[in-house]
Amino acid sequence: MPELPEVEVVKRSLNRKVQNLIIKKVKINDSKLRYCIDKKKIRKIVGLRIKKVKRRSKFLLFFFNNNIIMFVHLGMTGKFFFIDKKNIKFKTSFYYNIDHKKDQKYDRVEFILNKKQKLIYNDVRKFGFIKFSDIKKYKNSMHFKNLGPEPLKKTFNQTYFKNYIIGRNRAIKEILMDQKFVSGIGNIYANEILFLSNVKPSRKVEKLKEFELKKIVKNAKKILKNAIDQGGSSIKDFSSSNGKKGSFQQYFNVYGKKGDLCNRVNCKSRITKSSMFNRATFFCSNCQK
Image 1 (cartoon, helix red, strand yellow):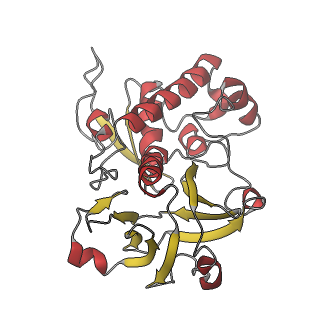
Image 2: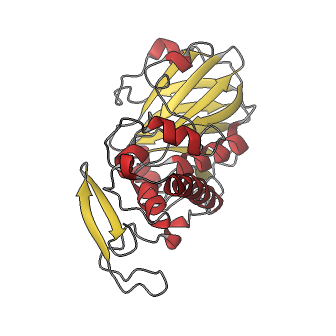
């Protein structure tokens, strides 16, 4: 599942490709995604201009010129393809190389755009979804109203962290992945953040020191920014609309590194893999206390 950096790269890719284009027609090949697509609502965007695409947590938000918002969650295998007027196909998402014959089978929704261009929502496993809302109401929907602050914003800081964990006796990795605490961080980046912060994933938050809270916040921002700069993590061949693959996975310290030597100077321990909350957890038992 894509995390914040991957979705941010998709957002930027889409803005370069579809901003200010007009929806001329919507073709629904399969409406049965995680939530069934509301056919009446999706047809209301026909004739509207895409003002911009934003990201909130792991959601993509398409803003139209009549205050309608279309928000999309990519689930496990959701992706957008953009087809230009020369019929050249560009990836804007993750998973798989472009395979015209194979891809077409999983094209769930086609947005026919002006200037003879097209945006396709493709989803193999159909865990993603497409919904609509009025611009004034979407923040109060079940998907957005309980989301925590964006980790790259100033509102995600040491003071917020300290106040949030008061009275909570949960593992730090669980907290980092809780979207009510902070938005967009998933399993991959939680592992990397905690390694850089020298904190064991199973450590209870009530036992964290002030300097450790500061390190976790600082490293969360650092790692996510670096991942965005590197184009995301191409676990399953993620690439942006210009075809550039994400390369942050080349800089992983622990994720997927089970049995490898820790890359810290003077540490001869090997990376351990365990399971926490049904998710693979990687850490160095020597460096992370």
